[in-house]
Image (cartoon, rainbow, N blue to C red; front, side):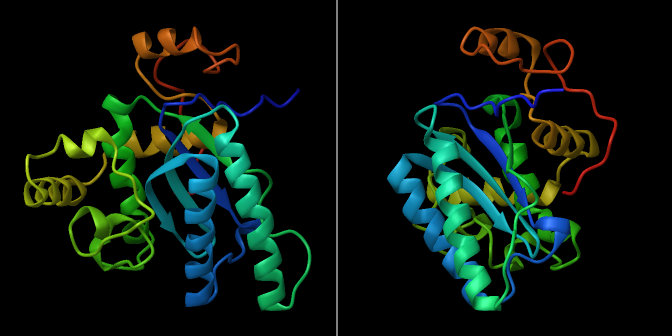
Length: 233
């Protein structure tokens, strides 16, 4: 069966996952994380992609982004992927592939899933047992959103600004949202829709979105994607 092209529609948030080949480490040292974030910042600006949230794990990473053109996201990911592989192979004195195939991505309905997706991303290190709280993990955008540091890479989505009228109110509201966690159903939907490349949204949203692209949006009918197999968080 022919592989569907990735779904990329400008102006909509997209959840992206990229993993190491055979789940091998893609970040080994502090310098690796820092270099990748510099690459992400440089190429997000170059290709006009807003980075709303991110987390870098040992063998994979997640991004929540809004590209401004049809080609912005694939161009950014290609540029980052190629440059980082050269850097990592040189640093580790290795050769060959680093990534597990092409990156996975899906488009999500912002008002239904964006804040949940941000919390899902922030909670990856907690689910993995690396830290007790999201605020303790250094390689994510979470600290920016709760006021612990300023991250030049991050562009908050309008839905984040709607959490409160002051910075303190927004930070407290978002911290509470992450503390409350993400339901098992939401976690499954966010993971599987991204790994499979199906859009994630309610029926009316999916019907409207289909008018903007010729690419199929779901395996079956519009609406909530089917969830049957397991993937990495």
